[in-house]
Image 1 (tube, rainbow, N blue to C red):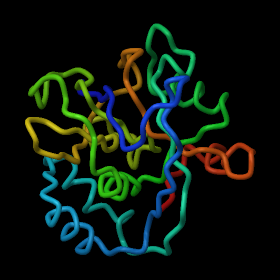
Image 2 (cartoon, rainbow, N blue to C red; image 1 turned 180 degrees about the horizontal axis):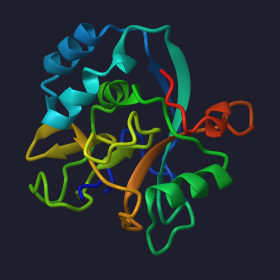
Image 3 (cartoon, rainbow, N blue to C red; image 1 turned 90 degrees about the vertical axis):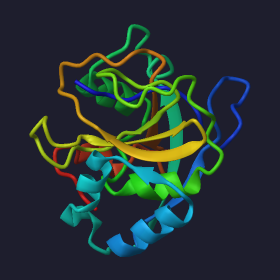
Image 4 (cartoon, helix red, strand yellow; image 1 turned 60 degrees about the vertical axis):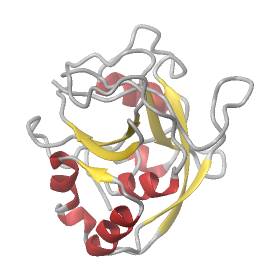
Length: 199
């Protein structure tokens, strides 16, 4: 099964190794507008990302501004790695929640200086190096359908890619996730709605 992980981001790490939160505006653009904006920046898509962008989740909706943070599994307390259910539970324990399913393209557009991946392998049935996974609620229970997006830069090419995995796949401890931070110091409301993707 293919999964995602790695490192790279827009903001410089803090002394504790955590990157500063990013204010991200999600929604408000049509599917066609997103494709145009991605293409204008030379961002490449794999077939899985194209499939996700065709989902009804990407029908135009009212925009919202979210606070996004990046955490490795290690930082979430999963020193030996973890499965998606374990990742979601560990994130919730820190007051973090999945991002909306349509956040991936907006995050890709916002992060313009992600570091180069240390290798050029695009698909190897494991978490790719140098990637940031956009942790979101899967749009479908089918494990053959793309689970979500990840961001990666390979050989100077900026990618918005999608991945597939099941709930048994163990992600490595150095895999990095983009997560929704709490608003006003509380647990994000979406953390209580994980079974129902909303856009």
